[in-house]
Length: 339
Ligand SMILES: NC(=O)c1ccc[n+]([C@@H]2O[C@H](COP(=O)([O-])OP(=O)(O)OC[C@H]3O[C@@H](n4cnc5c(N)ncnc54)[C@H](OP(=O)(O)O)[C@@H]3O)[C@@H](O)[C@H]2O)c1
Image 1 (cartoon, rainbow, N blue to C red):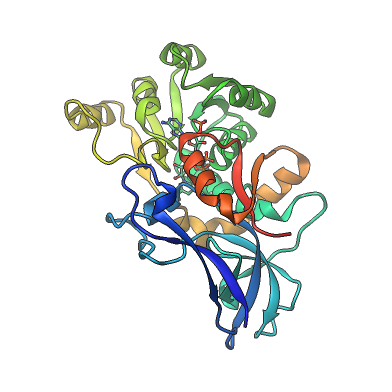
Image 2 (image 1 turned 180 degrees about the horizontal axis):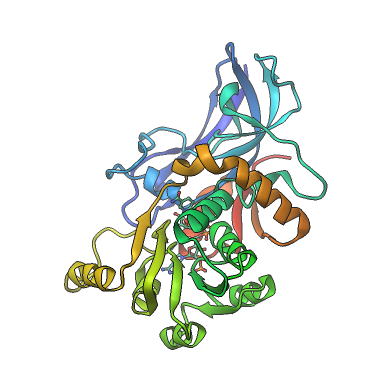
C-alpha cells in the first residue's frame, strides 16, 4: 500500500498564515480503483487563490476543511494506472494538492508532452492556469488596442508578466509595477515600456510620468495603494479586468478611513469605466484551445518569456506560500516535491 506525506490545514489562518495553521502527516493511500491512477508529485504550484481556500468566508469555491489536504495543481508521474489511457511513467497535470503522492481520477488529468527545452513545470505557470488567466482576462475584458497604455502590477509574477508581454504583442504600451529594484530591472529586460517600483516614495509621480496619455487598461492583480494611484489616471472608457486583490488577502478588516465606495461609483460613472471581475474558469471552455495555440507559439518563439521561482521540498511550502503573499517570490512559485 502506498503512503503519502501531506500538509493539511490545522486551523483557519487569521491574517497572515503561520506554520501552526498547518500540520504535516504521513498516511496510507487507497489503491487506485477503476478509472483512477496513483501519482508521484513532481511539482506543486503555489498560487495566491489558496489563501481564499484556507478561509471559510463566502467564495466561489468551497474551503479546504480543517484536517483536509491543502489543494493545488500538480505535475506528477504516473506510478500505476487502473485506466488504459495512462501508463506508468506518463507525466500528467492534475490537482493532487500539497502532498508527495495522490490517487486521482484519470479523466481529470491532462497528459503532458514536454517539448524541447521548455520544462514540464511550465504547465503550472506560463502554459497553465496563470498564463491562461492573463490571456483570457486581458484579451476578453481588457481588449488592448495598438498604442493604448496597459498597466499591470505583480508584473514579475506569472499572471502579470504574461499580461505585459501579451499587451506588447498586441501593439499596446505596457507599464509594469513590481516591488523592488531587482524586479523592476527584470521588467525592463522583458521589454516593458516602463517599469515602476510600488514601494518607491514617489511611486504616484512615477506612475503619472509613465502614463502621459492616461491608462486605457488596468489589469488589476493587487488592489490597495496601487489601485489608489491608478484610479485617477484611468481614461474615459478604460477597461479594468479585475483578476485579483492580493494586497488584501491577509487582511482581517476593511481599511481604515471613510467609505469611498460612493466616490468610486462616481468615477466609474463619469469615465464610463468597465470594471469586470472574473474567475478564469469561466473562459476555459471557449478559450483554452486558442490559448494553447497562441501561448505555445509565443513561448517557443521567445516572444513571451517566463521566470520560475523553484523551491525544493514540500517542507518549505508553507514558508514559500507566506513569502509569495508579501512579494518575496521572484517569478512563478513552484515547489519541487520530487525528481
Ligand atoms: N481571477 C482569476 O481567475 C485568477 C487566476 C490566477 C491568479 N489570479 C490573481 O492574479 C494575481 C497574481 O497572481 P500570480 O499567481 O501571478 O501571483 P504572483 O505575482 O506570483 O504573487 C503575488 C505578488 O503580488 C505582489 N503583491 C503582494 N502584495 C502587494 C501589495 N500590497 N501591492 C502590490 N503588489 C503586491 C507581490 O509582487 P511584488 O513584489 O511585485 O509586489 C507578489 O509577488 C493574484 O491576485 C491572484 O489571486 C486570479
